[in-house]
Structure formats: structure tokens, C-alpha cells
Amino acid sequence: MSTKYKFGDNDKLYFITYAIVYWIDLFIRKEYKDIIIESWKYCQAQKGLEIYGWVIMPSHIHMIIASNKNKLTDIVRDMKSYTSTQLKTAIKDNPYESRKEWMIWMMKRAGMKNTNNHQWQLWQQHNHPLEILDNEMFYQKLYYIHQNPVKEGFVEHAEDYYYSSARDFHNRKGLVDLCYIQ
Image (tube, rainbow, N blue to C red; front, side, top):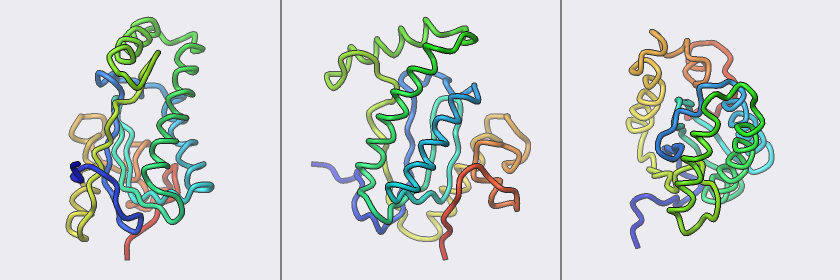
């Protein structure tokens, strides 16, 4: 069995990416991004999730994480399961979601293709966790995370993107409490 993309030791930091099925640009609405943020805060308080860097892009999320309590595999699994349920409800209940039928159709289509699901599938199955081996790799991944919104043309400066930890690294309070490496 491959260990290339698996969480190992909780004492290590991991760079992960998780994406919406078919790379649907779901996170263009504040209320959907806020569901993610609230889930992270809960996981920090209750499950020992440590967040070192993050960004929410329209179709995917990048994070650098660790845990001081529960297994990262379990935290990420529970977080994706919870947010999937919450986001599905938010999509269905949002009277302003003009792409509602299309998104539901795409997520049902993804669910039918996956033997682990019987209905919808919101998240792609994999996270591709990569262990952060040293400070150089940490800062390379953090830079990559923070430059995503700049590269996509959403902002000129990384710290101006509201749904990113770049703000915290430029003396601006971000949305999530961060851990820092020594």
C-alpha cells in the first residue's frame, strides 16, 4: 500500500488540498466559506486541529495542518463529512443560488460514480497530504498557499485576500487562529 499520500505522525505538519467534485466553484459565496471557517474553529477547539496556513479558493482549499490531540485522518474525515452535509443544505436552502440545480446535478452525478456514496458527493475523495519535511518546505508551501489568490487575479497583494492566512502574516487579524513554527 502506498504511503506517499497518507497522514503519518500527528507531530508532523502536513500540506493538504481538498477540492469540490468536478472543481465546481462553490466558494464564491460568503455563506459557504463561513461554513468551512466555523468547522475549522470547532475542530481547533474540540479535536486538536492546528492550522499553520490556509486559503479558501473558489473550488478548493489548501492548508498546512497538524494535530495535538486526535488523528489528522479522523479530523479531516469528520470535517469533510460535516461540511459536506452543511454545504448541501446551504445550497438547497439558498434562494439566491442561481446554479443550484446544476450543482446538485453534478454532485449527484459524482455520488453515483463513487461506490462509497449513494447520493451526493461534494468533496473529491483525496486530500493528498504531504508531510512538511523542513522549514524550507514549510515556507515554500505557505508561499504557494498565499499566492493562490494573487496568481488567479483576485487580489494584487496576498494579504488583501480575506479568506487566507496571509493576513495574519502581515499584521492583520485573520479569520482563524494560527499556530506558528519556531
